[in-house]
Length: 332
Image 1 (cartoon, rainbow, N blue to C red):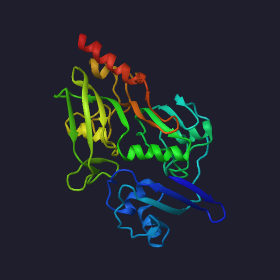
Image 2 (cartoon, rainbow, N blue to C red):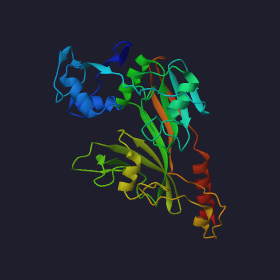
Image 3 (cartoon, rainbow, N blue to C red):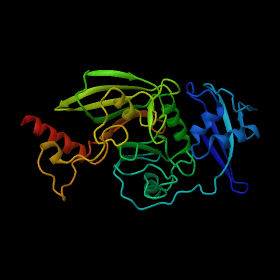
Image 4 (cartoon, rainbow, N blue to C red):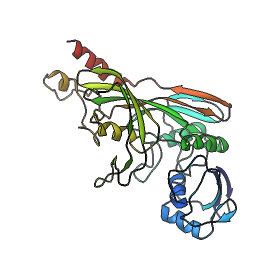
């Protein structure tokens, strides 16, 4: 995706080369996923007014994008489209002139939204490097993928627009290798398996996703049990697709939701006294207070360096503490 800005008319021109087979059959849906700051209704109106062309020709919102299509989108800039840089400490795993790789802590939202205008990873990154790519829109500079608020671990941000397009295409074509560590409820029966179950919005709870065979999109997660400890399992998950809450939904689907997951499991913080049966005292601090999911490893092709690179983040202390406590209790 490339971008030119006309400051007088406040129009940005984006060029998108479609890589792989898009998972949606309609152009308006495809573009609303690429430009999440704009509604699908807005994108549809833009297409009808000739603001978007495919291979040099106007099309209808129902046009089916295909691999190799070149989409040119002329999109008005949102007036609120800006991020305030904030001086927030970052755990930087790697940085060069093209990308910034961060070990994201829990309780940090990735980018600004209606409910989180400050304190996000993007606010912090904008202060740190001041030159994030603009391809994701003004509220998501540098963003090519996301992690849930309470998921820790490796996240890649991009500084250069041309590199952003190449890396975004890898995510779109599912060639990026991602590996997560999850602590799950119960003893996972199989040592390894592939969960192949479509995911869509929950029928009743708008904040949740669910396995939906009626309207869900294809989703696949490979997993392998690392260790079974008492009535819990430490699992390595490798998502093939990238649906919202995918690992959390899939592990619940097979009967082993993440521990401390308020949406898909029993939720609630875990205290040592919960596991030992001792009396709980008011000042006791939780061993783990958020869903147990960590993005441990990511591997992708670096267009700037012209080679494949890998990045890894160590397991966070709260998950380490829970695993060690479970081991101690299992040993008696």
